[in-house]
Length: 138
Image: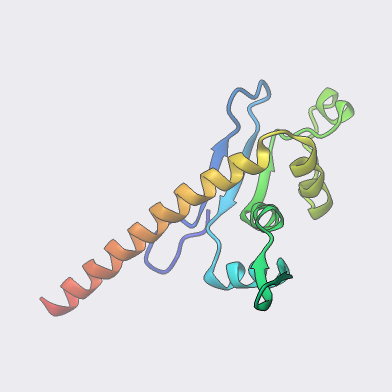
């Protein structure tokens, strides 16, 4: 678990619902720079009446956001052989891509958990910031 300077957990583990193997994934809160980098990768020029307009490809943006937010997994099997051997799939970019494309609902699960986790993280950071200002002033 990564803890920020103010003591707030940035990474959290989440159990995959109804998974018979007890698979769980670790999700991190993305930094503002991560969102900027993702958005710059998924912009596309769309012709409009006014000439051209940059828009964000939301499907690709969600996919890249899920790829970036997913930081680890346990008891995660991508092949029958891995499952039979009780050998979790290695956590690599290629396997993350396979998992997001192969496992229905995984991307949505990651994005939902990430959104909730980011809200909690931001709220905790704001509380810590207010507490530090209060203690510094009084």
